Image: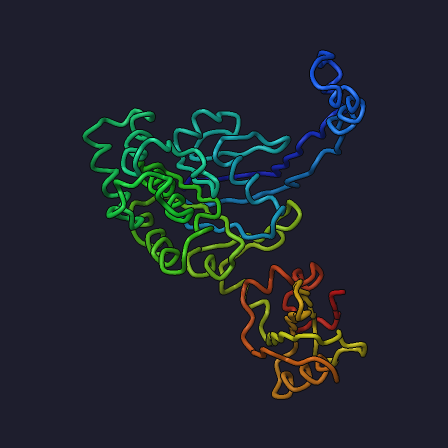
Length: 365
């Protein structure tokens, strides 16, 4: 069976910005203040930056009909990778195919995919209603009017916007505008659907409905779905397989339960403190990693997410380590580790067969 996506050693480097001298060609006219500050203006608009390695040696295969998730922190390369799959940008090096077409055949790829971006609602036509936006987009893509009318209604019903079809974008919330863009992607029965953080800005109920739509109707149509998200819990609920990206590389890849199994034997203790200093002593031996997050504000809130070997006294030992004479603990919980923890644990632990067997300790500063 031919893979829907087959990428081999793909890399992407964004070229740096050369030093420019914008402003030097401006005519010497206008307010004297502008002329006085012209040299400073030149400095402000003369920029240089180094090339950015967005992807490095990425290889993966996605089977037809599979729901494949890309998870990673901001800047890990998720959007660059999905744009390469969409035929919107070409890799600097590497090869592969999408929907049966070479990465060099970007126009053919674009005909075979439906792509949704989290910022796509900025491209809506504001003088048109939600339904008119959908039908207008269908007409731009050459869909017959009678089919566009049927598909627009079905798509708006799928995303829960049919009752709001006559509203203009200015009358819709950000989340509802995002759902209009999702509806546009549902117009076509393309072999491949690419969703770049599709649930950003959506409330929990709508997010659940979107995930059910992905698991249900889109899967039943036989469409291959690739989606990115930084909310690993949502990805865990919908994806057949997941790839975790870090700094432009695929660090881990597999089925959600197999990835979560790497954390077997660990427990997660989350503690929120107010006006409490960080512990000065060494953590207990059972602690594998601990990441504190300080939140700005008058109360000096600090959030700890501590990973420790699972045992009856784990919670007590972690609390005894975190708790200080001053301040107070305002929240305390112990839970099973999830894919979210794979995103936050150090790289050396990620590559272990089981992080529960590692003795290394990482405490965030």
